[in-house]
Image (cartoon, rainbow, N blue to C red; front, side, top):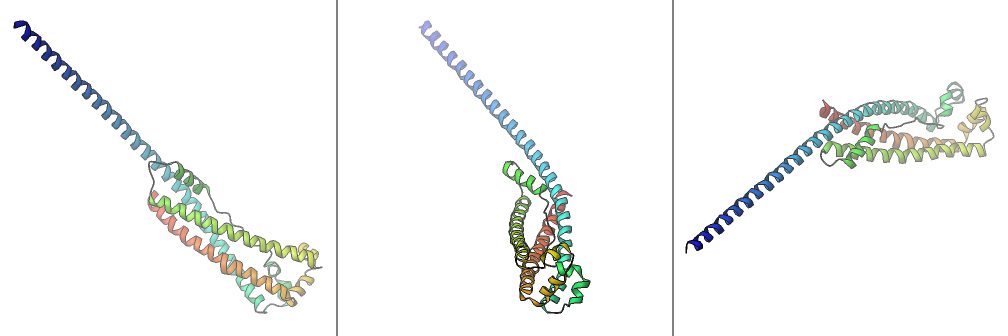
Amino acid sequence: MIKFFRKIRQNYTMKNQSSKYIKYAIGEIVLVVIGILIAVSINDWSETNKQKQELQNIYTIISEDLKQDIKHVDEIIEQYKIRDSIFQRILNNKITKEDYKNCLFCTRVITGYPDLTINKNGYNLLAKYTNNSKYYKDSLQLRAMQFYTKQLVELHADDGIISEDLKSNYTDWKNNYHWFADYITGRNLDGFIDYALNDPDYKNRVANFYFLHIKIYAQILENFNQEATIILSDIKKRIN
């Protein structure tokens, strides 16, 4: 009987020890899991702060880009306002031979247009950040991306149309008008002036140029500056 109770006691002791070992092992596992979660949280927090600072730096670059772009676009809009008065005189038959002789720019009014190159340093960095970032994003980032995507597409499309129209003018004049060589070199403008005053073809070209540049392109530039000014204001609030 004594042996029987000893055996029971030994079995109980072993079970008790096994239970303690299991509890200890579970406790160790829990501690390891907690440690891992804390490490992951710290890493996420660190990456979030790192990417937040990176985004702030990108906003600073975009801010400088937009300041330059807005200034440049304003200058182009002013140039178009000057051209507008000349367009009106030509289209309303208010310009004379003497006017053309005394105003060299009047003879070149549809042979070129102001060059515009949008700064894309900040935009390219923002696009890369947007594709790679998984920790920190904000609504301003999305709005800035939408602004650039929309405006760059519109400006590129209109620039292509305008460029083709300009090319068409030069090509047609070169192939069909005897005065082109004198005109392009500036040696003699009499042939061109006679054409500009008497050939309906010139007024048609001026009207088309006016429509593309003043009615469409200049309005797109105005819209660009309006939206850019809003984005710039929001970015300034964010980085200051």
